[in-house]
Length: 180
Image 1 (spheres, one colour):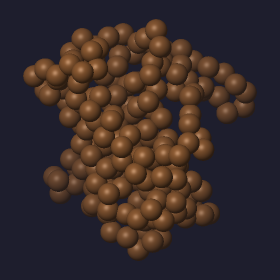
Image 2: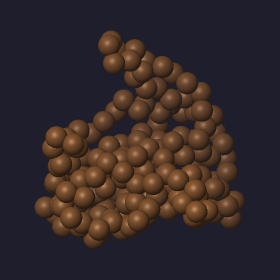
Image 3: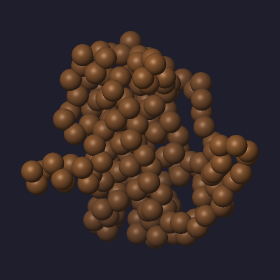
Image 4: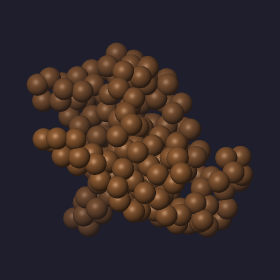
């Protein structure tokens, strides 16, 4: 993919890109609405990681996709302790970068076969290598971000903060609630 190429019409039609950018924009809006001290908040013992740590983790999955080597995505690469965990402005910049990257992907990029590597055992270090596509993994990363937004929403409840009603909801949950 040419990183400075303009997005093509087909990309904007991709449901996976649309959904991922919606989810990332929801996180971006949230980060722009909170304070730097809120970003560092934990809700122990209920949630042991800070808003910043959850944000870093969601970005790690997208970074693994962006930085894949030889069509292999390594989900085990984490940036624990990275400044994005405690600097909200860095997180905002990274989310904007990921959105820009997503919007520049074309149909060929999305359908390209890739391999993912991930640890799969809690008892011992066991890895799985699985075939996938970039589009499928973008969808996974976006839905995984929603899961962490739900954890962040728990933290905000301890701060008596208001968030978007659907912040942390899965798209299927939002559809269900619209039908009620």
